Length: 487
Image (tube, rainbow, N blue to C red; front, side, top):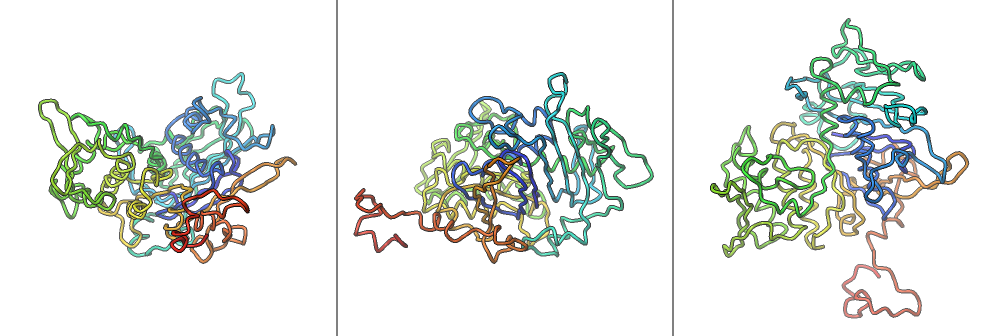
């Protein structure tokens, strides 16, 4: 669970510092930088798994060409910063499994990961690529300080005590010493004993030290790596959601929407809650059908049809009248909603889920149903985390007035352009502002609070026509004026 993120020098972020709760909604105009926040999440997740170059190329690019590393750095005109830095505070699971199948148990579960990258000066003659690591650190947050780093409302007992656990005597799991080509990144003994740390030359590293962590060498670093790898940007493509699955298909929903049918079939088979309250398949299907009925009233049943001869799984839906048809006939928005309903009941879908414009394809009258679903996917911060309440988190972005007006006020961040100076030249950055009198406003000055005027674009999006104009808009009809909130 990502609880705080600091970014500087990446795309249009300069000194960004934002806290996250279980559910966060980021609103802003087109092109302001909402999606860049997801690019940070994707980049950090990739850095925990791939080389520096591969991680950079995985970031969303302009157009269809691969991302140029140069474009990831903050720039003003022709001037570009030489470094980018990231700091992520996160709650990690108690244990994870490494690439060799070994189980790692974290010595403490509230961690802070910091990384500073720079353009490599000798990139033209180096086989290591255009990026180098200036600094990498993994440290812990003391349990006694945890409440200060978790400002969103939650119950200390049982929720916080179930997720913030363990102890650590020495500060670092990963640290950096020295400068220039003499920089050394140290991987410390996990339990802080007398063992000597392993030292690695930062200048020659093609990837982060965290990305190579194993259960044997540093269990806590491995768990942190797995947590960051679980941060996902969902891009649920209707074409993938419509596809049937064969009997041997993966049983986890892919970020692009593939394997929806196999995932639901698996959850129905295992009872989706393999702990206190096991369920028969009919109960699992009924739970998903009831959730879908909040979006489409004419839904009675959902099930997976297994064609034994062809070894094909097909998702089926029946109406109230009993008419059955394949779910691939559903609309794009309905299929995305269905996929989220399956993720809601999947205890394996832990970590951070990012979703762009969840209102796409949803009728305005049904947007509240989508928002309810999105807010019920994350962990319940009033109950202990277990298999029935996994550590999930959701961040969405939007520019929809219907979404902004109906999300909880404490969940909203408004992205606004901010003019800054870089080496004497003007550049556009972005700032994330919150509403006053919410937990996000604690410690924020006036610059951190969104103005009422900015909110009016969302709360009253109908603009008056210009003097002398008679566009004959729907909103201008006299028989509708009394029904509109304000025009």
